[in-house]
Image 1 (cartoon, one colour):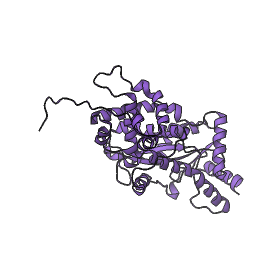
Image 2 (cartoon, one colour):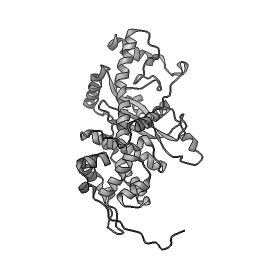
Image 3 (tube, helix red, strand yellow):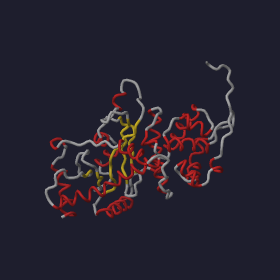
Length: 344
């Protein structure tokens, strides 16, 4: 039966800041009340309505709806029922809040810019396993999405067979996201994302001086992007690889913490493709804010093995064949110099 002239119900909305204690609030929304309040002050101008016509959703309610979606990735109906709004309202709110958070990207996601910042970043990475000149470790992870439809839909199907966005981030030694590219289809190779990124252009232009990134074997060896030896044939090369693995592990830990904090990125996003891109970047920004504010990783609401399986499913390695690694003599020489000077 198709309802006609059905009145729109206005359901009273709960005040989570008052009704939840600190522990339940943190578990439900993945952030403390203090950090949510801090975030609200920065977003309120983009979220508030000019009037309260038609019982408009208050900025704090909008923010909590979006945070709950990031925390679960569940169907919008469940979010709507919990916050006593309609499903279309949840969809609009998630899109609106995510776009507002993305505006904060220049403030919270940035590579070290000054000489002092670069040197400090190198020192912090060096403390991990004595690897010199490093200002970031780079890798990609897949975030599952529904089929975007259209003629290009199959570009988003990755090697494991599901639709995804291949997300590239750079991690600092404290697991913060310092660079993110979150718009590439799941079939895109990790190295292609980097080569076509602004970050690669900046390194090619010498913006970061002699600083380097660490990447796995899915990336081509560059004088500013150091990869491991595939077949180490000396003790110094083995020591280089050992230090490389321990140092580059920061980006792998970053993805695990990011997806544990916001499980929607592990379970998948059943929303519009462009909104999904905004959600991914928004979660990276919130992840950095949580680190800045000293937030713990929230306890899981689901079985750990279930979430771990989803996190693992998002890691898809791309390896070059030995004869197709795009390594030239200069890049090999740069790695050899570091190996000889620091790991012999």
